[in-house]
Structures are given as structure tokens and as C-alpha cells.
Length: 311
Image (cartoon, rainbow, N blue to C red):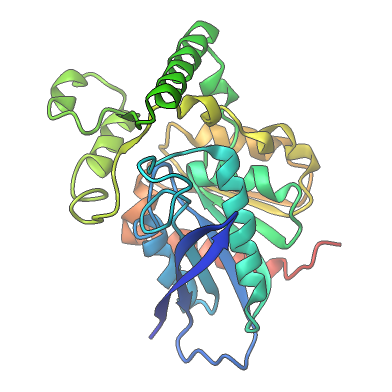
């Protein structure tokens, strides 16, 4: 039976809290492949990574899920300003998570497994971090210019609003939070009755106990209101043709967001794979057991094909 340990490490002086999932019959004198996981926006370590960590440990990996700075159980750079989603800070947290895994005497090569927005964070980080020898993504937002920048007037309005919130927070010294998707609105379903299936599915996960409170008491849909300033940064998208690691993209067959992974996959020039889970949606890869089982099979097979290191 697999086990997990609560661990901590430092990222730019901030305490980061994680869960380290260990294989059954774990022996610290042996060497295991490691996996560093990055979660969907705006999740904490106990959600999707809490579903996949034990499954990857069952396959013999040491898997790490952690809370970004200012999220979940991790520390923050400034008290009162928790639930930040600053992308460059996350790049640093991921690099330090990789360093933490690399410091463990029982971890050999390290793989990356990124979910949804966490896939974008990982894609942007590992283009210059070859300690990660193979990269797999699940329901990942890997080519998001088509979403962020397709309507420049809307983009400008979002950025101006985020800039205004930053100015207000600087001048008042008080955090301003918002729910990026509106899931905390008690009338969300009424107001969005004709919304796309993906929007309603997102609410079903984040707006209910299925993926939010009270199931995960350290989780909130509310984040600092300057999020759009850095949400547009996805360097991995623009360096996909420079990616040195092999890449495996996994999406749900019916996911509206699958185009983001496909566009990224098409630009990658290293060894690559693309898989669709039949009948599955974007969120359907988060917590539906039969979908998770298929994803784990694919990810395990992919990592085993590429033992590393990067040549």
C-alpha cells in the first residue's frame, strides 16, 4: 500500500508545503523515478494532485504535489495577501520543488506532470530546466494566446482592471480578491443557463463540494484581483519548438480546451505523443476514476519509454 508524507522546502525564503507520495514497500536505500506535479488553476495540492499522486506511487514513482506560495498550507510573501496567482513566482516554486526532489537520496531522474494551468507553468519553466527529463500534461492550457489575446479590446480591459487593482492594493495596503470564474455566486447557474458545457462543468467541479469547499478547507475560488497581469504569460507556448524534453499531451475527447494542447503539441519538435481519452471532458480527467486509470497508464508508459537524461 502506498503512503504519503507531509514535507516542506523553501522557495525564495517562503515555506512551501507539499505531499510526497511513496511506493508500497518503499525502501529509502533504493532509487526511484520522481515526478513533480503542478495543479490546475487555482487548486491546492489536495485536489487533482491528491488523486494522481497515490496512483503514480502505485506504479513505483515518488510523486510530489505542493501548494504554490500563498496558497493552501504554504507561506506567503506578505501577510494578508494570500491566494495570489503570480506566474513568475510559480516558476520559482516549481524550480525549487525540482531541487527538493533532486536532493532526496532515493530519487533518481525526475519527470514533470502538469494539469490544466499547471501544465502551462511547467511548459514555461522546463524549457530552461533540464533536470526534468520528460513532460506529460493532462487537460493542459498550453497554447493560450488564442484565449488571452484573441480579442484585444477585451484583453486591454482585463489588463487595465488588473492594473487598477494593483494600484489600489499598493496605496491601501489591503488585498482585493475576486472569483475569476464567478463560481462563488449563488446565482451562477441561473445567470449562466445558456453557457457552454465547459463553463457549467467548471462550476460543477469548483462551485460544489466535488472539487471545492468544504472538501478541501484550504481551497478558495477567490484570488488576488491583479491575476490578469501575469495570467497571459505562457512562455512555453512560444518556445515549444525549442523544447528538448519528450512531450506527451493528454486531453479529454470532448474537452473544449483540447485545442490548447493540440496546438502546443503541433509546435513541439522533440519526441512527442498526443492522446484523447474517449468520452472524457476537461474536468472529467480530474477525478473520474476510470479516466484517471487511463491517464495513469499512458503517463507511466510514456515516462518508461524515456528514462533520460536529456542528451
